[in-house]
Length: 440
Image 1 (cartoon, rainbow, N blue to C red):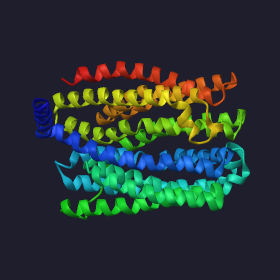
Image 2 (spheres, helix red, strand yellow; image 1 turned 180 degrees about the vertical axis):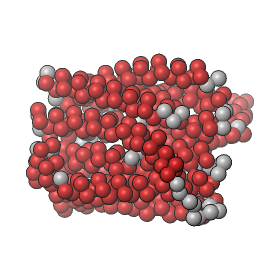
Image 3 (tube, rainbow, N blue to C red; image 1 turned 180 degrees about the horizontal axis):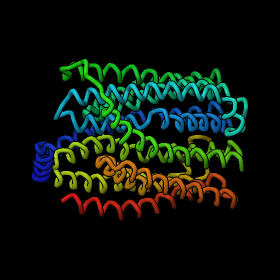
């Protein structure tokens, strides 16, 4: 037994002594810790809110959030991913360039978030009537527009902290803001229904914005030399070459998911949307570890690629593919076995285990697609990533319409999700082999 302990200690010490190993372990610890805590709080809030609001109103609440996050991808302009990439590239070369990147992406994020929020407020009545099929949701949509502004700013802030691999601040800030969001959502839902729940969500993001700003300010205080950088038109390439295609990558996926849900409402009711959303919350929880780990992958791959450390690049990429797919597979299997019990947490009317089983299975392929997508981003080939996401979006829309029309309801979207990710993963695997051949 003592011998085994010594081997484990030696193996662990060997990993920590390796610069790449230390970065992965340290980043993973904080990213996983923060993601686990914040996701657990958010996961619990959805269960409590479902019991407070009831199935139908919970469906309305989830659709409003889905609508707001759809517009978020437009307002953010991919600023978070662009910030991560360019700060990771330049933090060891020229810190002033990294600082300039943060200022540029933040400026664009703020401007477009304000514009998008105003547009949502202006067309809130039309969105509630035509897309959400309930004119009474207009006020909630308008309040959600305020939520959107802070979400857009959060994306850039998180991107900056990720670029510096400052995952400890991301973890702690996310946890503290999640606690505030949980309390605000529950109080809001209890006293004011759907409107109160939306306002509660906004409060959580306001707190996160403040905490992130404090963390970033402290970080740049320590490293910035020139606090008055000069800007030129060439600096816009950060947005034009990476930010815009990154935004389109997120937008096309969000738009597809939003469309199939609105189509589900049109063909069925908000009750079906509520059931699907409950299962989708579990799907997101399954992916919390892969997604948390992915926060450390993009800055690492970008930094390694920028420094031409090709061997380390391939190693980090392969390790993360195996690790993320394995983790997602183990958690998905557990969820499949206890699917009926898990959905029962939302209430007896949510118990349709086949939906959760299908979505859980899709997470394995989703985890693989996520890592390959980050590899594509680290190479700066965001338009290639957009084409993959466009194909996935076409698949899920076509399959969802087919199965919903066939009478499968929310189960139809779950089937479409699984099929789309399987095809998506096959296509990405082929492309991944082409990438690895060039990186020797």
